[in-house]
Length: 532
Image 1 (tube, rainbow, N blue to C red):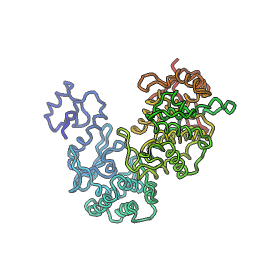
Image 2 (cartoon, rainbow, N blue to C red; image 1 turned 45 degrees about the vertical axis):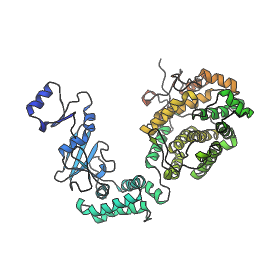
Image 3 (tube, one colour; image 1 turned 180 degrees about the vertical axis):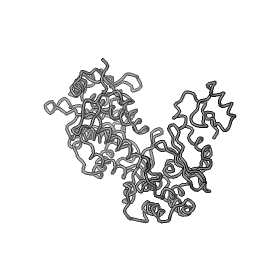
Image 4 (cartoon, rainbow, N blue to C red; image 1 turned 90 degrees about the horizontal axis):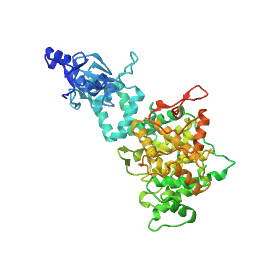
């Protein structure tokens, strides 16, 4: 693929190249490779045009081995098979590792720039070949567990029929690409397990789960693991309910239900919501909206219900489905309490496929054992329910109900997401979902927890006045940030041992201090330190 950015020395006279370099029109990337891009980092330019460069250096090479599953570069390495060349080219930010092997086969896909992408069948056969780690690098081919995980992913994404065809093709090309029959047996075994025709033991947890009838979304579970690690590395967070002041939390469930519905589009004026919940008023023309609000309130105000603990994923799912059926009971078109039958998405984010919902929940719930505190478990629970998005509608509300159950069960203050914090909350969720960055989400949820702790919920009028002073009722697009109440700022200052002014979550974790460490010496992070 021609590129306006890349110039190869062999395409122009040496004098032309030299003159353009002297005039500042070109700069050298590597031997024989130049660019007209004079501002971007060299590594970025090379990575952007990696396939053009590799195709020129290794014409008719095939992307295969460890590079095949992703179709490209992993950890700065691109693995190729070339009919005649065996060498390694080290460039800034990219190492191209070519081995001698079969050239392009009939079903390998031609790519712009002169490279080919190995077909699935060929790539499976070649990754069945044994290899070893060398010079600190990963094995050239996938190890047994990685190969099984790739097979499971192919089954999940492409379906059983295509996976069966990939196996047939791997058997057909094995001799051409130099794969021994005893090595190819690894592929046949893994595919047989994925298709349900074989039941032997496997190494990959994902493939074992599929064999057991509960396949799960590997990418989502990897994201859950990242969030678990981030929560364990974060500063401790605890905002205990004062048992000597029960009236302070009297109207908290009302505001929890009010805001949780409001940010999902079930909007009432506060005074109207108060009449609906406390005085059984029925506004004309809005029976479903009224039911949403009242039923959410009845669940979150039922302390015995909110204190329930669940020993396993099945108990958790049963409670979640029952609560969802209650909340969405006035909307039969959304199949209350029933898991989705069709894929759903928000913007460009496609949620977990219906056939993977149960298995993904089982994997997600199992990771609760790795979290030490109610706050960690609550934040994690909210995210994995929202990320799986198991229902046709009402997923945000049920995620927050399940989250607060973790806090109520251990006498911790709940987390409310007020209207004025909606964009921060959703932006943090998107950052984790789309960029796999949990840090903003953790800080955003900590902030919401502190804000909730700072409000005195003894009656609706006084609580609303406190919230008004913190911009809680502001439209989320107003540009006015949610402020922390004085009580919350005092609690944070006590935690940090350092006077603090108003603080907000930031996109970068580089602006935080680490005043805490766990018993094992692991450093953890907290809020940003205020400017002097």
